[in-house]
Amino acid sequence: MKLFVLGLDGASYRLIHRFVEEDKLPSFKKLIKEGIFRKLKTTNPPHTAPGWTNAFTGVQPGKHGIYQFWDTQSPNYYGEYMGSNHVGVSTVWEILNQFSYKTIMVNIPMTYPPKEVNGVMISWPLSNTLRYAYPKDMLFKIAKAGGHYASDINIMFENNLEYISQAIEITKKRVKTIDYFLKNGEWDLFISVFTEIDRISHYYWNFMDESSPVYNHEVEEKYKLAIENIYCETDLALGKILEMLPSDALLMLLSDHGFTVGEVDFYVQTFLMKHSLLAVKEIDKKSIKENSWFYMEEAGKEYEVDWNQTTAYMASPGSYGVNINLKGRQNHGIIEQEQYEQERDKIISLLKKILHPNKKTPLFRDVLKREEVYAGASLNKAPDIIMVPYEYSTMVHHKIHPDKIFGKPEQKGMHDKDAIFGLYGENIQLKESGEIALEDIAPTILNLFAIRTPSYMDGESMIQFNDEQENWKDFVIPNEGSGGYKGEEAYTREEAYTREESQEVAEKLKSLGYL
Image 1: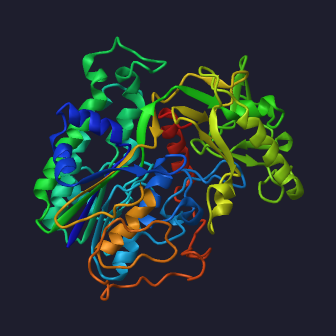
Image 2 (image 1 turned 90 degrees about the vertical axis):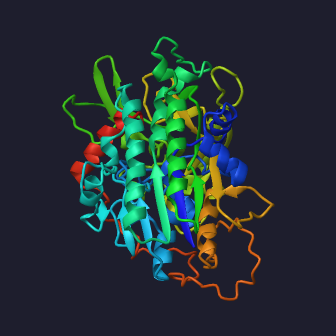
Image 3 (image 1 turned 180 degrees about the vertical axis):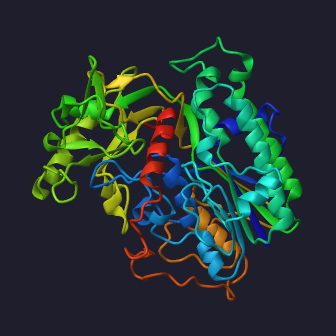
């Protein structure tokens, strides 16, 4: 038995059904008709870094420790970029490798720097590097075959609407990469993640959706059809992959999140500043900062957060989280441990009272303490407070605005919770009860290879098996009794990126609207 997992970053259950009903996605239509296609429960908030990590570890962030691209509890506030070094539990390929199964991994988020595997690992760096493959010569082989090998940071949208043409070409090359490995590689599990739907959805949504507050109907038709066209190109890729796969292979399809229209940005740091919970101070204009989420401009002057006068701040871009500036944890913490709960309660109460600027209804469905959302050995790495919007068309933005707490959306399309799960192959039956969540992916993969679900995993297998599992294998859990956590000796604080690479990543993410 072989399993091919096709990950489609940002693929929307709602949009796929819409385009299928319009007869624009024949391969998806075939999968829906002949296989299994369901909505998939995402992370909270729905984001790439924790999403793919949930899927391929079988646990939620409280156990694996990845809450965003950044460390959300950095002592020096400017969180380092997270990578494979920071994942606190075993991945499915690490488990399968222990049983001598061969794996091929291509462009899975949060896998950089690459680790040695029983097979191939083409990781997912955000820096401009060629050091992202195992074995090291694999990039040369892919390039020679005409496949996709460029570092992800070099192919992201940079305010150039012609990117749609590039995204379609990259999708074609990803198929060539898969074709190369299917013809030349040995594998039991093959995972490949495509990121183009996510890129296009973020920045072309306002050309498609008339409900967008920044709807633009004056652009060329090809930009209005950009999202539809990238789904159609992905459908072609899916069809080719189905044709290329060996007869004994199953195909699993999933996304980390879906998409919706961006309606409004909420500047939580400005909100905290207005309530005297965050302070800024003027700085020299020549001051150089690696990250910009603690920076403000007003009347030609520049400011940064004054940590010695700040009670609370946004944990990192995209985290939907607020941290308390705690003594003994943050380098310039001012809040005593005995004040911690009091400050959290006060901020939660304030955030719950905020109204949506257009609808005049509460902006947040809930505002929670981190222990109400997450659990596990990595809970201490989570933001202290988690904001849950009624709709993810609201972005909790890191920007510090001099006076406004709301603004027009910088990202035209926003991550939503309508992710997808699909399965295509013979003699596969899903369990009928319950919803499917991202953390159910890893147990399902393991069970397909007759490996029992480790007791520490939060997810459970979605497959209905008829046998008694007598000959199934058991994974030896590292530090059994600690929730699958590898331990601090395995969870290295070694940075995934050098200082120079971090600056490059920051600049790239800023151009994408993350900073």
